[in-house]
Image 1 (cartoon, rainbow, N blue to C red):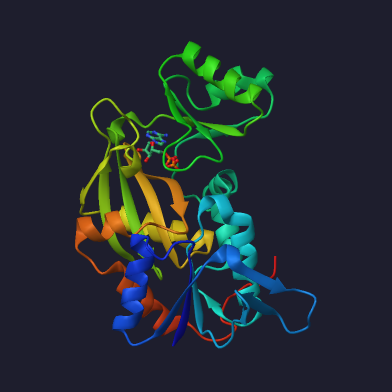
Image 2: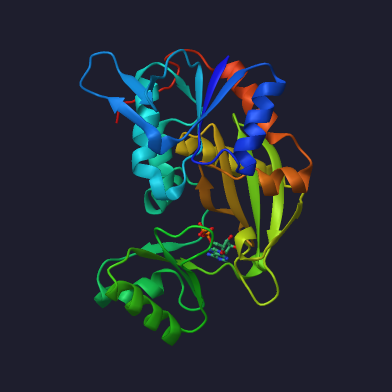
Length: 301
Ligand code: ADP
């Protein structure tokens, strides 16, 4: 097969591993810098050009789109879809998962467990909003944040009010969430590939920190997940329409709660802590699934 990996940097661990997995399995693979793709949209025959060449003959595209280029990246993936190329994660699902609020609304509609979450626009509504999520301590999150940046634990009502006022004053979008104390600074990352959890790890925050992100000094270890956790992760990826996803769960007294569904999950932490060939499993999924015009939305929407 001829496979494109949309990635800004060939040297990233995840990109390198996907290239390796393609080559090991006998495929032709091209790493394409998303921001250097340009598109002919006026033509009846959709095209993508790249550094002067017309990109043709691809069977599948693996989008690895960073949060900062979601808008342009999803447009490129949509163009591939219009050309009939199978996208491992389709453009509509990518946009959906990048919008934290939209994602939580979709997950809640399907009855998937999640921390109680509230969203408001006006500072006048802060008090009632805090009551909605059960009062302090509570977690405040910037909607645009990644890697734990802009996630704050407000331990008291006063602290929550000050942080909320500061964020709202900056005209940023924020949400408030019930603090899941019993998670103990740990979360579980489930790597879903084609309706299966193929690997899972537990990330533990360092002493004195509640955020378990590896970028924030968290450590990862292999974890055995329960059937309920497995089913929740698979369902969450499905609701988002993602074939490949990193689903983050918190272990709570009322069962697994989904925090986030990531559409370009990093492979380094999960492969190293589980010793699994996740990249190989993604390519295997493509081999089984990719057919021209197989993307469900075919670039619509
Ligand atoms: P990001 O998308 O920036 O990584 P997250 O929403 O995943 O932000 O939050 C970062 C970390 O903070 C999580 O991995 C988890 O350890 C912790 N965390 C987030 N929300 C909660 C919550 N409601 N209760 C307890 N811990 C939380």
